[in-house]
Structure formats: C-alpha cells, structure tokens
Length: 418
Ligand code: SAJ
Image (tube, rainbow, N blue to C red; front, side, top):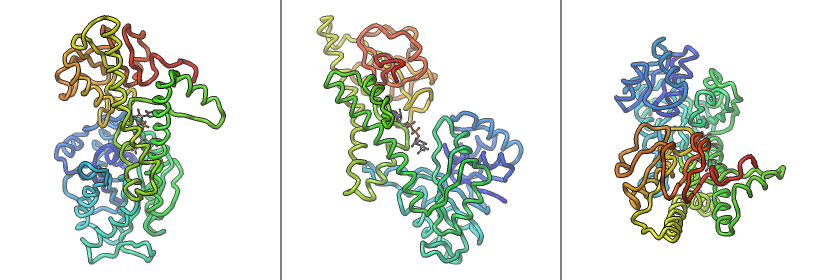
C-alpha cells in the first residue's frame, strides 16, 4: 500500500511521517521545491517538537520521499491551506481545487481521497465534483450513496501546535465519508496509526464539527476578553474574578489575553459565518470582540504614557517601553497571526528606538521590527512594561519596576487563586 500526502506543512508533514513510521510507503507532494529538497535530506522546514526525528528516520529508512509531481497511490490525503479570499472573510478554496486537479490524472479505481484541511461545509462534495470533472472516465461519490470507483472523505485534523506528534496518535478522529463506503475506507486508513477512537459521520457533519470546535474555543476566549474590558472599567481584577467564578462546579472560564492568534481559531469561525451569515450572530460578535482586543491593549499603553507624563513631568517623546513576548501563545516560537506581534509593530510606530522587545524563543527580531531593540528579560529598564505572552521566563522573573500593562495576568494576576 502506498499513501500520498498533498501539502507538506504543519499538518501534512507530521501525518506523512506518522504513516511512514508504521512502515507504509509515503510519497509527499508539495509545490515548494525548498520543502521537497529539505525533506528528502531527512530534515524539516517547520518547527514542531519530535517532528525532525520522525522525518529523519522515515526518510533514512526509505518510507518517506517528497516530490513536486503527483504519482499513483492507493490513498491521497489533502492537507493544504484554506485561507481567506482577499480582504473579506470568505474562504479561498483554490489550494484545495489545485490539489484535486493535480492528483486527478493519477487516480485509479479503488483509490481513496481524504480532505484534511479545515474547510467550509460542502467542500468535500465540491472536491468530489472537481475530481469528477477532471476524470470523466471514473465515477466519484455523491450524497445519494451509490457505489463509486473512487472514495472521498473528510477527516479534519485537530492537533494542537506544539503537541502534534502526540495528539495525532491520541486524539479521537471524526471521519466523514460522502457515502458510508467512503467512511469505511477512511476508517481503515486512519486505524493504521490513530489510537484514539475514530468516529464515523457524514462529510458535511465532519466539516461542521471541526469548525464548531474552534468556534467554541473562540466564543469562550471572547467571553474572557469581554470580561477583562468590563472589569477594567469597573476597577475589578479580572484574574481574581475568573478564579473565583471558576470555583463554581459548572463554570470554567478561559483566560483573557491580547487577542486570539494562530491560523485556526481566528479564521475557522468565519467559515461558519460566511455560510449562514444571518443566523451566526454570536459567532460573528465573538470574532469582533477578539479581533478588537489588540487595539484596546494599545489604548491601555497610551493611558499608561499619559500617567507616566503626569507623574514624572516627562514628555511622551521621552518615555521608554518594554514589550514582553511576540509569539501567538506561550513557550513557542510561532509568530504567525500573533496579536502580540501586531501590538509590538504598532508600539514601534509610536516609540521607535525607545521600544525594546523581549522574546526568549527567537534569536532575533523579525524585519517588521527593525527600528526597535531586541532585549533580554534580565536587563530591562523601562518606564512602561507591556506583557503580551505568558512565557515561562516572564512568569519566573521579578515584576519589573515602572508602570505595567499586563494582558495575561502574569504580574498583576492573583497567583495560585485559580
Ligand atoms: N487563548 C487565550 N486564552 C485562552 C486560551 C487561548 O487568549 O484561555 C489564545 C492563545 O493565546 C492563542 C489563541 O487563543 O492566541 C489560540 O490558541 P489555542 O491554544 O487555543 O489554539 P491553537 O490555535 O494553537 O490550536 C487550535 C486547537 N483547537 C482547539 O483547542 C479547539 C487545536 O486542537 C486545533 O487542531 C487547531 O486550533 C487547528 O489546527 O484548528
């Protein structure tokens, strides 16, 4: 048996390595020559714990190989991005469509095609239609349920960045075939390495399940973020408030922060909104609350500058600011879609070289921050300290002297109360 994984990014590459670790021959397909060459040397082009070892051993034992041109296989897994189209929040399915068109010429009767990318409801059926258009000599599944030459299913990934290699094996998997026969084929495939339960449904429900999981988290984070605005207005410590409310047996509020980052939770809920706009009011409001948080943090910094000027008699042109953390969540080096990065860039506009940015998980600042300083947490003297990410280094350090804008409750929260 041979498996082909199309798209060798944060999901495709770990999944390819996982199948290969079960001694299955895997061919990875990617449009990037750089990714393909790196993988064929047994190396990785993305950062994820334990992925380097897995890829190195899969490639050196001959079970994993990468190429830019699709080849025949028994099963094809599609793990390509589904970003927004332009500036609005409509999903861009062009990567999925391109992946379908690229594998269509090598498809054969008995093949299985699985969509792993997080996608709006109906995409798996669209995929089947695109494949059918490109290969009129083969039959593809429809919701009506008749037998088809090729099977098509959706099996959304739900792994947490930073824990991908464990969660791929341990998490339960939702498997949604266009027909029951498609589900059966996908179930046999994932049973090769998944130790969690593989639960079967139809393709549309599987698509919605994945979007729902991330929208659920988004709504819950928005609740915490909204509380932080309300508490600030009412002069209540939001961290203490949440710790107290969470002592109720049926209350479990998440933590406020500077906004929601990463490439999933801030994106996927919009796929629900765009498919049913008039009835997705809460999910839309959630996105607006979480997207509005970084600008609120910037207003808090402006207020701190005004306070500093009043206290010291200094002008806003002299104030120094330190900003702690750039990553989109604690103890990782991933700056993609990070509200902390956006806030630091805006602070650089205001303070230029009077801004120092500390991010212990990277070796130097990104180019967008080339007008401020890169600092280490040990040697920061600044008038205002803005904490953006709850990295372990910041939790361990003494609370710095000066005015504090703490978006994570690391220095101003009620420690031990949660
Ligand atoms: N955040 C808060 N407060 C919290 C929890 C999170 O502000 O209490 C923020 C984080 O700082 C970060 C953002 O939310 O900026 C998202 O972080 P996350 O850890 O909640 O999630 P991701 O984006 O790393 O991964 C999510 C996961 N989904 C769920 O937990 C429902 C993961 O399982 C998915 O596989 C992944 O999205 C994905 O690929 O869709």
